[in-house]
Length: 165
Image 1 (cartoon, one colour):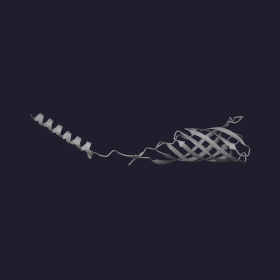
Image 2 (tube, rainbow, N blue to C red):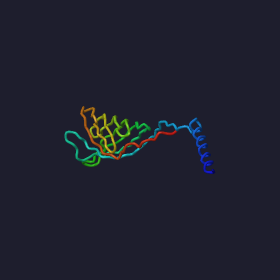
Image 3 (spheres, rainbow, N blue to C red):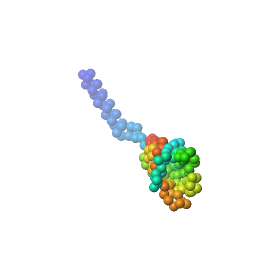
Image 4 (cartoon, rainbow, N blue to C red):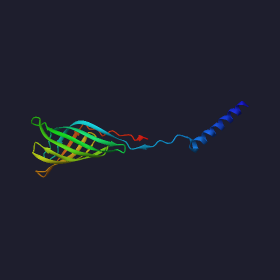
């Protein structure tokens, strides 16, 4: 008899629990909204020119990249870098300021620069992924493209979780 009373109490209390949660008595479902963060990185790398006569000795690149990364994986920001020639002694080669934008896994670069070695203004465009950048500089005075391959210490920006409201 005690078993039946216990069973009846459990059944009735579960109906009360179910009606409470089904008819609006439970906690509301969480909502999420987009979040963003700024990611600043200092980096270094090696650059090989890929013109008619490719360079076997790479140039050294030092730079700073600042990106605003959103939880939907969009990223945008800027990159400032200097390139140093290593062949025939260390010397300042060029500097670039570029806009960086795209998805976290694949970023596009477009910008301007100045080649001290060639006394020339540059236009630059590139595609960047983890630890690598493939692009070309356009030397305005010489009207020629100078493609390059860069291996650097820049990983993809870290993902940003959506924030819970």
